[in-house]
Length: 200
Length: 162
Image (cartoon, rainbow over all chains, first blue to last red; front, top):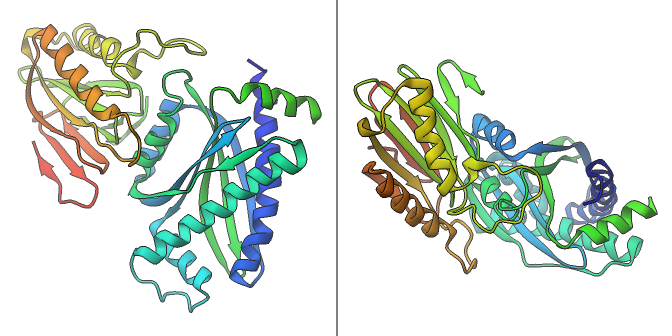
């Protein structure tokens, strides 16, 4: 296994490049200045990570996406419910506060953001590193934050005790939307990540 | 150990034990929460397991025993005995979780987990006196070590006490 800190750096680089591209697409979509920033990237123990999410509690709406190809990844984004309502208004370009409750439109909005981010990641892999990747259709789930996170990490539960967490923030003109973004390298991605490590 | 005002939070692949007046809390999806309680001593513990069996697992790093039913349940029983002098003969169990949150996933991890937990508890002679498992939504559970009761909230539903 490649040195963990080097792998983390490679994933952080991919996340940063992807987020920059996703920002441009997102700005076009909401027809105003939008920026997605990378707030924090860290490797942590799965028990500690879930304890913290369970303490914060609350419900979220999230989208799960599988990135299949030479470097298989699992990808999850989550928004707190209130933020997902605001996101819906911004994407539909209607006055903020119009979306009062979570509905099919909100689910579509989260799904769309998931698509944008996953496509951006795939594009970074193919254009910057010549690695073919394809995102699966997003699966949107509304549940407890800790439940979503638990299901997400179950993909590596058997083999690994650590997870790389990437926290990001969406800033759209006067609005701040918090979005937690997780990228999880799966079995089989080691070789590709080693290759990326050697190119940076 | 995570502790806030007499509340213990259990993460994934984790065990917490304590005595009254502590509360032990966790949130579950396909994982199973096993609550063991000793009524006389008012002590109990919770295991948050992810998978049924540790056998044949190819892993990186050390084995996190609380991740699996076959290693986590014996460890929970052992910790209750060693730390709190709670004999196995006085223990009863309540189990929660095992939901199928992600649709389109072919294997039913939650159901496999539940079956393994039931089998292992039976092998140890620990009786399951209450359970709430399955479904498609997450569970938040709160285990009161003063009463042994568990407040169980399934996402989108009213909480129930078991």
